[in-house]
Image (cartoon, rainbow, N blue to C red):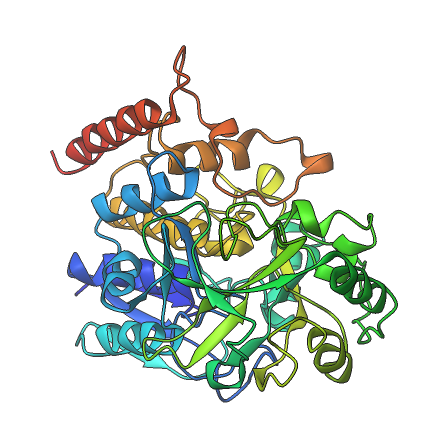
Amino acid sequence: MRKKVIVVGAGLAGVEATYYLIKHNIEVDLYEQRPKKNTGEHHTAYFGELVCSNSLKSNNLDNACGLLKEEMRHMGSITMEVAKKTQVPAGNALSVDRDLFSRFLTEEILQSPLVHFHNEEFSLLDDKAYIIVATGPLSSQSIIDKLEALTNDQMFSFFDACAPIIEKESIDFNKAYFKSRYEQGDNSYINCAMNEKEYKTFYQELIKAELAKLHDFDKKYFEGCMPIEVMAKRGENTLRYGPLKPMGLRKTPEDRPYAVVQLRQDNVSGSLYNMVGFQTNLTYKEQKRVFSLIPGLEHAKFVRYGLMHRNTYICAPRHLNPDLSLKKHKNIFIAGQLSGVEGYVESAATGIIVAINVLRHLNGLESSIPPINTMIGALLNYLKLCNPSNFAPMNANFGILKCEGKKDKNEISKIALSSLEDWLGELNA
């Protein structure tokens, strides 16, 4: 009888896990409730939909997420493969046409005869089969209830947000201009510069704008995806040192903008742009009013407004083994943001690691974890060692990576990739 695994959730982590398993001749029962039962934040029926942003962050190896992406390429990541095919201009970052990206992922997975797709909710987590739960930060209440019952503990959550998307043709290019920060060699971003008076008017209207009502759970935000109005309330100049910093964005050598709003291309055709750093919980009416104060966006047409959503995650150090299986139910693995990592790339990477170890268990082998001097190994090590009492989700960063005596980030990345290759070689030995 052919070996089979259940994967619950067709986000980035679920897709990566499924792809790895079918590449190793393992049948997968893949469950995804969308679009029959939607989350309220997703807009398509495609797998791996990018809800918040179309950016997978920097491609440079002196950047932690850039290193993690390269590690994923070494591990045969479908996310990285499809991202390359659907890439849009974004300077040194890897950004994609989000619709093409998700559609290509879906087609790649569903074309395999080893994938048995079930467009329905799955919550029978006490099954004796190997189960990978990759339902993401917007997991259904029934999944949350089942995980809480299995762990005898409450799930954690925080608020996340996504930014508005604007039609390019509605932007006034008598005021807006193309340029990438710090002369990166291209003009990937649209820039809307403000003088001091324009910025202060925008700022005052932003901090007093009406907010949409939130759900009935703690108002806790993730620092890496802070709503712009929350960030603004920390001080008048906070945005000027954050997403609106003007450095490196002069239109001419003589120009000295006080603040600059950047927009990043969102699709291959270049007809849509998203507002960088403008995650928000303002009402749709207020988004239109306040963001139209930005020079160049006075008549902007919004194809999607920003919105807030819940991010749910498990207390990994309390409930997960190093291979991301539940300590009390070792046949159940948790992948993606549900495991306590934060970010598209980080979530996808855990899907690969979980699939590697499910495959090892199916073949009667012990789990194997990447070395802690790799970025993915460092993330897993963080999940294992963090104090459960103050556990919070973690992005890839060089602060958690162990590389004795090394300070140059390119050198650290070179060592990490070499260590990863040695580990992959051991897996295949």
